[in-house]
Length: 383
Image 1: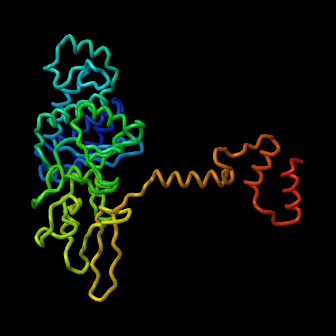
Image 2: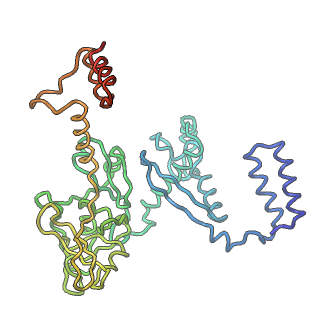
Image 3: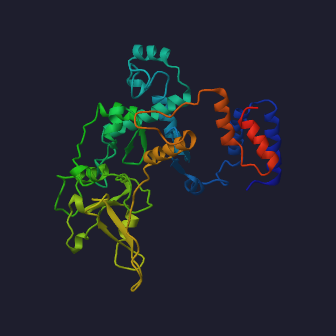
């Protein structure tokens, strides 16, 4: 959209600036040059900016950290600058300093803030992160986000295994599907109002939440979230978290006489909830009453008339810990041999020569000729 002569002049200008300025400075100067080339917004207009706006929260890494990516329109960027200027100043909203003032800088005691500044060794990006965290907590505490979302309270809802809590290890799962280290769960639990879900015979059927209503109640939603794999849609293979699901009448649709009791309800995302019907390709659901899957909802794809029934499937997440333990046992057996009598450990190979022979036996492939067989024998005997 720029005339050829103006484009040539702009490139020459940038080349001249590059001789005397750093890359970061050139970025800022280049933006000023672009504004000079396009003072009336003919190259980039509001419609184009609206199309490009986005903010994405990427998945968690192995360290449970998440990366934000996005494009902010000019107004949002301006508002963010205002927030960071007030909440991300040195000494403010420092989670590593119990005496650091929280909130906006104008509300802080000057003497307390001055002392906090001296103790603040964070970088500016770290202060920006802590300011956003403090702002989100303040908005949540003030109730500005509302009271409920799809029946769940608009709060940080976490479930954790009791054994992990006692060991202070592992992770908790939020209703949004985020993993929280147990240290964070314990710290947050000190200020939380706990809900206790009671389970029948350690199965997946919680009691005392039955309600004869069309829509599930908040206690029923919390009980559903507390179930095994209850933090996802119950349809096999679906990864929609509990904050994005509805409560599906899994035994019998409400319009056909189904009850809104916790033993008849299951989480289902809007897409899968609408796919439960009598049509070919749709889904039929039900609940296992006995066996290891008691209380869990099964999903079956409807087949054509006269065709065999498809298998009923349960959305079960892999038990990674049990799988690892099984593989660890097999690996130790392969390396050390089968375990000895109960209460004894594998015998250690004490001598250097015996240990060397053990290593040779594990690393040398079977001989292919008589010469190789003799050489392997000499090596194994340490000659």
